[in-house]
Structure formats: C-alpha cells, structure tokens
Length: 640
Image (cartoon, rainbow, N blue to C red):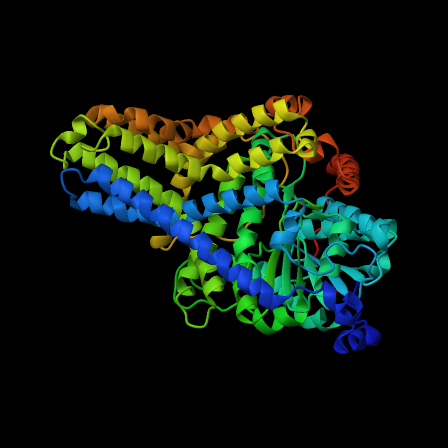
C-alpha cells in the first residue's frame, strides 16, 4: 500500500519518439486548421444569435417599462435584467443547437468531438495511467466499493496493464481513520488487484482536494502519463476508462478530456427528480456547448482524464490576494484549471454522450444547497482572475460564464424586487394600477414572459424532445408515457426548486459581502429523512421572504399577484418541499413504479449492478459493525 516508484522506460521511449502518432496513424488525427475555420464560423453564428436574442429581450423590456418614460427604477430593472441574460440566452442556444445535432446527425460526436481513437476499441493502450481517488472523511465501504466495481469492470474490459489505482485519503477524524484503515486492509486481502492498489493518508489536509492531488503529483506524477480523477462517490465503466486513455494516446495536444456524468440510481424522491431532469437534459445541452466551444471546453473536477506533464506545468493554482471568503485558496479549482490548460496551449474537451460515467447526487435539499453554495463561493473567486491579462478569449469567457451562473438567480430576485418597488411607489404615473408591466400593451409583457420561461427551461425541453424522438432512448427510460409524465412532474419540480435556490444564493452572496463564507465540510451522500427541525432551520428564510412578498403585493399591487404567485410557491413551501423530498415511503413508491426513472433504473449496466451489489453487502456489514465495540482512534496517519 506504499508509494513505490515504477520505471517505465519502454513507454517513455515510445512516447518520446512519437510512437503515439505513428500508432494512431496520420489520417486518424483531427485536422486543427480545418477545425479552427469551422469553429470560427460556428462561434460567429452562435454569438450573433446570442447577441440578437439578448438585445431583443432588452428592447422588449424597455418598451414594456418605458411607455411613459424610463424612471431610475426602470433603468435599474433593465441593468439587472441584462445580468440575467448571458447565462439564460447561451443556455437556450446551447439546447437548440444540441437538439438539432442530436436529431440530425447519426453520430453526433463526430460534429462536436473530432478526436482520433475515440471508437478504436481494438487499439492497444500506450500511456501509463493513474486512477486517483481523493477522499475526505468518507464512508470507506462506499469509496472502496466503487473502486472495486470500477477496477473489476476495467479488468473485464481488457485488463489492468498500464493502470494503477491510488486512494488518496485526507481523512482527519481519528475514528473515521481507524475505520478507513481497517476497511482498506480487508479490501486488499479480498481483491485480486492489490499489487496495483495504493493507499495513503495525510496528517494535514492542507489545500483540501487540490492540495491532496498536488501532494501525489509531486511524489508520483512523473511515473505516469495521465491521471483519471474520480471523486469519492464516482463510478466508471472499464470501457469508458479505456476510451479516455485511447483518446489521450491519439491526441497529443489534448490536455483534459471530460465525460458527462450521470447520477446513480436512488430511492430518494428529491434525488430521483433532480437527476432525472439532469439526465435527459444534459446530452442536448452539452452537444450544443461542445459544438462552439470545441477545444476550450469545461472541466468539472472529476470523471475526467488529464495529461499530467501539461497539468503540472500549467495548472498550479494561485493563492488569491486579500482577505475574506473570496481570497486565499480557490475552492472551484476545476474551471480555473481548464482555463489554465487552454492558456498553456492544450485542448480541453467534453465527450457529450452518456457512456459509463457516474456519481452519487445529493440525497436531500440541504445537502444540494450546501454543495451549490460552495460552488458559488468558488466561482465568485474568479472575479479576482477574469480581468487579468493573458487569458485566451475562450478561457476568459468560461471564467465569466462561471461567475454569471451564480449571479443570474439573485439578479432575477432583485429584478422582481425592483418591480415591486415600482408598483408600490407608483413611479410610472399610476399606470401600474391598470397593468402590472406599466402602460405598454399587456400582450408584449406576456410574450416577453413566455419567451424567458422557454429560454430558462430550454435544456429540459430539448432533452425531453431528444429522448422522446428516439425509440431506443424512450425504452431506456421505461417508455414514452413514463418519460413524458415524469418530465412534466420534473418541470414543476424545477419551477419550485429554482426560486428556493435563487434566494439561498442571494442570501449567501450578501453574507460573502459581509465576510462570511463556507468552510470545507464532510459531504453527506446517502439517503436519509430530513427532520422537520432541520427543514425549518434551513429554509425558514425562503418561506418568510415569499410570505412577505405576497403580502406586500396583495396590499400595494394586487394586480401583480398572478405574475408573482407561480414564483413564490416554491419558497413559500420550501420547508414542506425539503421534508417530503426525503420521505422514505414516497421514494420507495417512485422507485417501485419507476417514476422519474433514469436508464440505470430500468437496466443497470454491469459496473452499476456490481457497485449496487457491493453496496448491499457493505450496508449489511455496516449494521454488524454498528453493534460491535467501538474502534480505537488512530493517534497518527497511516504510514505512506
């Protein structure tokens, strides 16, 4: 279980002589000049459409608000509305172009991911790959179970030659460390690949996940060509892993290749609804994004392969200057690392298909919110970086979009708040009493509202159309009727969830402005019923804000209630939404009837079925251990 350096001179000589290129063949490699010309045309078309759409929306709102002249509040509403548009409009056109590609191309990946070796299953692997799994105070049975299922499937897919596996523990709790060490020892006694499995635990988790990875890179990175980074809850099929390595072998300028990540089957109602919407919506959205982003795509921090030498040369994270929660260690490291890789001259690409890449989604609304707010704080740290010189245009755009992702929801709340202020103060010459959108004809306001709703939910709509249009995909979700009915329910679920999240993000950003941020904590990954006490403690602000807003509109601008009630229902019912989202009986009923089922619920792929079997055995063992005497805490970390 120690780190043992392993020389691989034959592999190094093969790569240094250009053996990868010779093996893949010149014709198999993408033609960068041709793709650059295509990308220039695509981006010109895409951003022209984005700009025209955003300008049309702004012009429509100006007409709605400005029939009697634009007041200061009107101008503020226009400015805030403009903040919401980039993320919304780009998402809309991503979904449109992705749906066109999905329905119009027999092989959609050919249009968006022209990578040599992608489908060459017979080619031998050349690069030496480390599969690294950073973990922090996690359930060791879950982590080791996913590793075992992944590696067993990899062995079935073609063997473990060229692969080694590293569990990089940052566990700090002494009792958890003792349990983890015992679990690792039993794991190594049981598995057939113990000679390729390595474990170490740090005594100090300095730098959190990035510090954990860099400690390993500085110790062992030179022994490998690539690393596949998996989160503690990640699961990947052997075929997906081997495809990633082949793609890296055959594309020497590829720095990071990211897979789409699907949720694993769940019996929790909240999780089922969320990951069902993500699953059917992500393919069209990701296809559209990859179509114009090309070699400057995103990285999501796990379930991806990375070229180690390029990463070590270009992707070391800066320490942000200043004081407060937006300074110091960068929490959202992934998109910054992707931008640095692009700045270093390497490609970052996404493979936008649903092939063998999984994770466990948050088991309840509080955990979902906490994860989102951690990302929010990390993405807002990019404010200190996005204006720095030296970023290529696409890398700078990715950082800017990461920031706007978490400003869009709070901006919508501020927009509605300004609208209420306008109505309450009567600043539009009293016309507000007859028309909630000012003196403009109500038809224009209705069209604008309908257009914004369509754009916001375009990825979900495109995903449903994509899945319903393909008979194989319909069957994978349990049939067209089940897919459509679940899609309608998930659409309503999303309408309830979005304003809850927007309020949470707005309150959190206000806290950041006062110097209050998040600290790194253990993630809860398993399903459990959230108590009434926790639901009230976490979501009373949403309920209170919605109640106050509805009361204010009822007293000062009752004609606006039809516009506000659909938005306020989610926050008003946030406590109930949280509590019943983890109701065990509801989750079991949904699973039994295959409602909001993802394809892995219908027919589990071998790696998923294997992981579920291991999890069942581990759960039984956990109950036995719970009745046993307590473990003695470790006084120091396990030796490296």
